[in-house]
Image 1 (cartoon, rainbow over the protein chains, first blue to last red):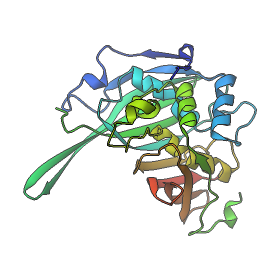
Image 2 (image 1 turned 135 degrees about the vertical axis):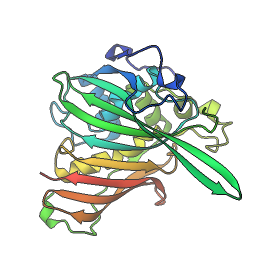
Image 3 (image 1 turned 90 degrees about the vertical axis):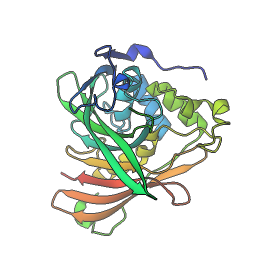
Image 4 (image 1 turned 180 degrees about the vertical axis):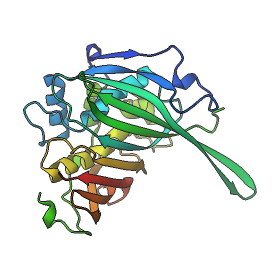
Length: 158
Length: 136
């Protein structure tokens, strides 16, 4: 498909070493995965509200579902989505509303990791989970949302 | 909605979204996530894991429940401190209609704690979890 995403709306920042470059042992709580910014324009807000049929929006308010729009592309650019990892779930905490014209800064960091060991038919299976915090603040430093994304890591992960 | 009129066991008003490939493509154009899984209809025809279909961005699954929470609060944005916790259960594919299903499990002076399911048109869970809806 022809890609119409407006890359002028976003930036990203962080070190050259990204989450996808780490081994499981190196994935420590608090590890900084970098982040980026997203500028909320009237045009994107109108497109999103129409697409999702969101009638809850006000004059300067942003449709609630856009909380994910702020950070999704940044997660790809910062390689937070590891190849073959499966998105297992989310925990979202809402703070202040985002407004049209805001520049949202998303910061990505490792929240936690977990290994679950199960024994079945004499075979031991270890399942690895990773939790990444995606926090969004506006240009005044006010918190907008915290989203903890959980991932089931691939079995081949070292 | 007046929290006083809501009781434990009540099902809260639901929001529904019909997902087709156009919606997924338009979503990709807004968020910039063009993963093959979502937008490459031809390539996904040979993908056995998802039965030859594309799947919606997981974040689209959450859309009905976020809208439902705003509608319950009568606000454009969930009140400060509101939380949603969910696990994805099954992919959402083009042709599916997904709805929020929130059932009040606990009520306090300023919040509703709900069991939550996001389900397809046949009632199968696409995501499951809980929500604590702050009603100031």
